[in-house]
Image (cartoon, rainbow, N blue to C red; front, side, top):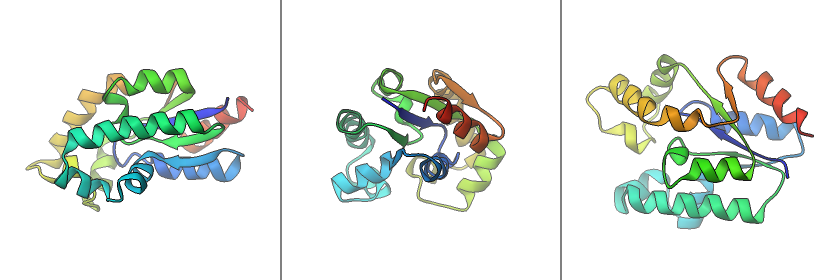
Amino acid sequence: MNNFFIVGMPASGKSRLGKFISSRTNLKFFDLDEEIEKNIKMKVKEIFESRGEDFFRKNETKTLNNIISKEDNFILATGGGTPYFNDNMTLINKSGISLFIDVDKKILFERISRNDKRPLLKKTDSLEEKISEIYNERVNFYKKSKYHLKSNIKEQALSIINSYS
């Protein structure tokens, strides 16, 4: 079993990294948010707006479980909140190798400022404060990852994943 899970804050580059890894290995790539959108037939933003966060989180865990039970040899980009809810981080670590990509909060702020598709970061007076708040809430869950990547993320991730082949 070569299952890899990328965790980190919203806008940290989890999907981009997953696609990069997939293009250079024999691993199938999954983006958890995209899989949820396919199942529910709504965008994440719409799910939060019409059904609420609890509904989203239940479906997130269900979708995560489905991928783990049906697939093998994959790399999965989780949602930013996935490790924080429903004991998902324990499930992730039991099911494969986790990599936490830890991106500087200033970079997250810059990326999120250019994009409004992140429902938890949309309605706030101070985006910088909200990013710090969410990071501080979630970082201990992210740090339960087997690997913590802070620089040269692409190279480190590829090297780690290739070491399991």
